[in-house]
Length: 307
Image 1 (cartoon, rainbow, N blue to C red):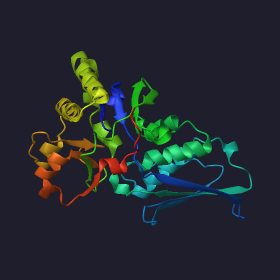
Image 2 (image 1 turned 60 degrees about the vertical axis):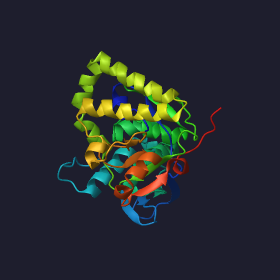
Image 3 (image 1 turned 180 degrees about the horizontal axis):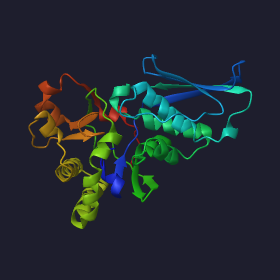
Image 4 (image 1 turned 30 degrees about the vertical axis):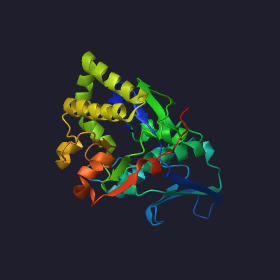
């Protein structure tokens, strides 16, 4: 999400673009062994290592309620898979048949590029489900990331109550030729980050002046035809939202020095995942950025021709 984070949940538009690396999902159907019908789910990292391997009996059994606070990461991951599979009609799975689902990422799990959203989009497509409903039932959040995964193109995303809406949006690669993405190597939980600011978002929603400001800034970013206008809009969006939600900008968090003509903005949950920077900022903070992986924006996002 380039612009609109957090505020998208209270009706502000969000601007988002898909990246080239994604997630594969393969499904095999086979005759069940003597032990009964089963669904086996194996999830693999980019390097091919298995990070999750779970097995469920079919028809799906009810899972005991777990203590979320004290449960292990594996228990939480198993619960996520169970919640998603439980949305499928029992008649979808054939009697006497078992299934093996294998997923593999094309990016590092710690990057924050969408391991959950691409999984939801793939599984929903396979099982004939509404991906937005799967997202809301299993993860919550705005659902913009699932919409991007489904569409595979840049989009404007907004919500009317619980209804998700989106329209096509294109960002010229000429405007972003000097942009870089900095991967910070520590994935943040965007849903828990959203939970932390829900109360303040409700207050923003009640403030007509602030809502108008956010809408205007996002509109300026969406319609920007020149680099200075685009980058100034992104910096302004970040500054207004940080002040309103009591969050630190990356300048405050990393103690970076603002640079004239520079751009440094959180991507993903604030305080982690990624930074969006331009060439001017990269040069000014060259030493501090050495320890992070940096990729050119135009190399990793899906490009669309802009007429």
